Image 1 (cartoon, rainbow, N blue to C red):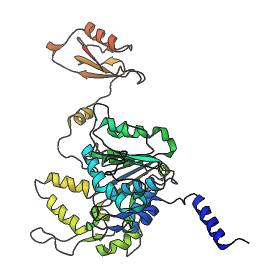
Image 2: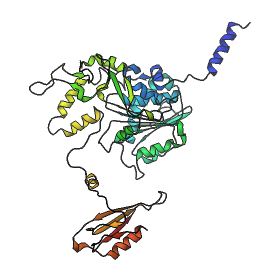
Image 3: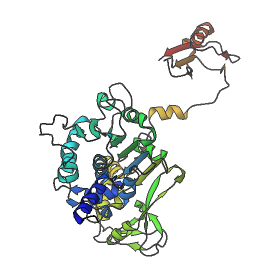
Image 4: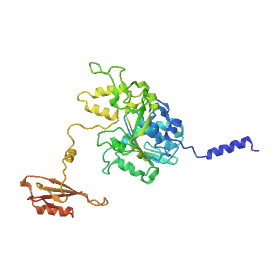
Length: 442
């Protein structure tokens, strides 16, 4: 017969040898994450139910999810940076591996490390046991590099090509990507450089991009959102139960004769039943909220989420705050303030008004011509060819320009230029007396 002491030892050894129970990022956060008073207005244990819309975002980043790409386009005051911190903590503790976190600049990466990452580690005992402090004698842990059993975390700035191409990683967190430079050290798009670090991990990688959007047509986060399943967070109306998106057009309020907001008049008007809902209902509405994808066939690989600051939990950024900010931003001459409102509160791209940019005006004037024929009225034929190796067949872009007769050259000159740029046969339309050719190779 086995003694109680022997059974206790045997059971303890069996529990120690069992693989750890796989939990999701949101479950880990609720179980182990502590919010520091130095980094959060609400310090203490993390509670996902405070920000229910983050649960599905975080769980898409869990190893048991087939999703490889997550895009989170959001307004301010919604917890998206803490969502990334939870992913970092989870990876260190539950699924160790090589990880990179990218901020817009190296300086901001250092700030993120000191103000967000170090409190995350210091205030979460399970992480503190795995990572030594930057002031310890362990030289492998610095402000921008953290080693832990089974992996590491490298913090880099999008303005440093050396950091972006440093090493392969399985987890890539790209924060505020719309603030990244368009080109880094002449080596191209920093997002593309960073994503190249994940190629060797194929189906096991996790790439998450977060940002408030910027200008329509130039916003990286908006483009990435459109490439995913385009999910929006729908809340149940407390009156009719219909699931609806909180849209700015449905926020109603009264203003006095001076144009100022009348206190306690801000309401959300349900598009389904027309009921005017006060904000104190929002906590229950958030708890019943669901993400609904516009392109669900993409959800298995790329989840993309969009949410505005109108969803900010009660006690953070209120509907009344949003209305006051909008009234101020709507005053004459406050275009930049209105743009900031659209970007950081509504979480939407800003559409430039007025005269279109030069490239767009030129693009809109394009015309269709017969292939291989220079039409009448053309004085200069300009060609631009990409002749770099390794990019496949060279492509020739032809621009047809008209100039006064005094500037026209001979057909022979045009023919020489075309022969240097393409083997295609190009003829001139009847009645064209003089065409010159210009070739530029890049």
